Image (cartoon, rainbow, N blue to C red):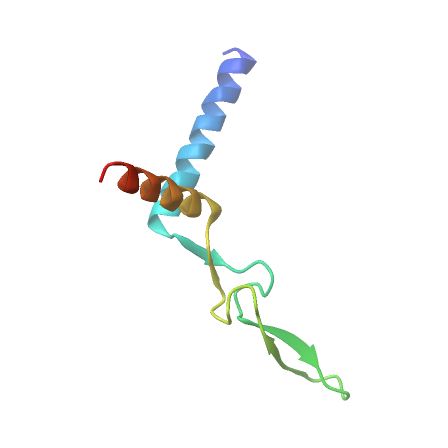
Length: 83
């Protein structure tokens, strides 16, 4: 098997895997708060406590995946163009 064919097959496999992940689970954990919805801080004694709510995910801990976002844009463009 030539390296070019192997690379294209691997790229196709990764793309289809990511597309199926976006279809099955469109939301992933927020990268800033790691899915917790808030920051973790420590008090003066060193004990952990809940910090401020995450502004990026609005304290839900979930964000839409990039692939799903691109699919939503393409679907909206197609829907608006065929009306």
